[in-house]
Image (cartoon, rainbow, N blue to C red; front, side, top):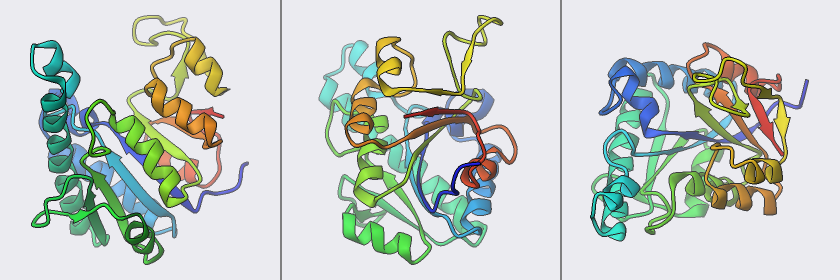
Length: 236
């Protein structure tokens, strides 16, 4: 068993909040996620969270539909803030103190992202939810997760998905798909495995920041992962 984690960066896709509908925010799913986060928070883990916005608007899809890419990406960043506020409400309802920090300034809704302030919140046992991506177009929330993880001194990036790790092919389409218990950054890049985008993987590789991919829908998986059990797939 590995050493338990003390400070983590949890990456949640927007689609994770949508549930079976595939779009919007499913409040039941939100409650489940909030309960999982509260469980590890009660164990003293310092938690930063980066949320995607694909359940509301995805910039790259808007660009392929003919929109200006920068404009589409900014719309996607605003979508992430909507998700952050929803998760904040769910967590606060469970008694977990939170702060939302946005890379795009919107002072009525969220604090501006300030690294030192974010670290101080973590030290005070507040869950910090990062919205607005990096604040720049052409960068994904995967890259945001890698960047924020390094800025706050996280020990790991934990990416929540709908499958229990990384496979050599889509396990939903190929029953014979092989799961990796662990894999190197280079193998992820060379095999073009859709774990995180290449910029995020390269950023983690350059800074020796491990990534764990696990199934968010598996009850207790996040708790076991935090305690040092081998859950999902480790990218190192």
